[in-house]
Image 1 (cartoon, one colour):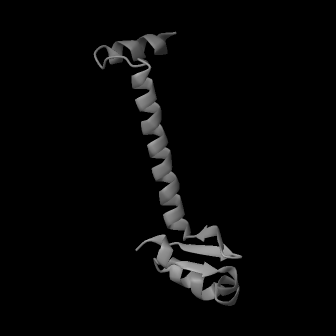
Image 2 (image 1 turned 135 degrees about the vertical axis):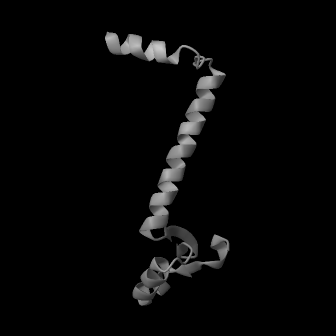
Amino acid sequence: MGLETRVKPISYLKAHSAEVMRDLADGAPPLVITQNGEAKAVLQDVASYAETQELLALLKLLAMARDDMAQGRVQPLEGLKDRIRARAAR
């Protein structure tokens, strides 16, 4: 189900806030809130928000790793143990 099916005006949120919160807690998809016909906010439950943030963090790490590879900032796995021990000895 896409977000376009869960679009409500802010007046709906004001009138049905308890129901909206209950639905979100029960696993309903995010709700897009509009003001003057324009999308202004997205409401989602805390668990799915945390999951989204974790996913974004992982994607950022992947992008950083891709950039490191492209810039040649990588080292072979061989000898990793020795490099770690050498750093720890400093």
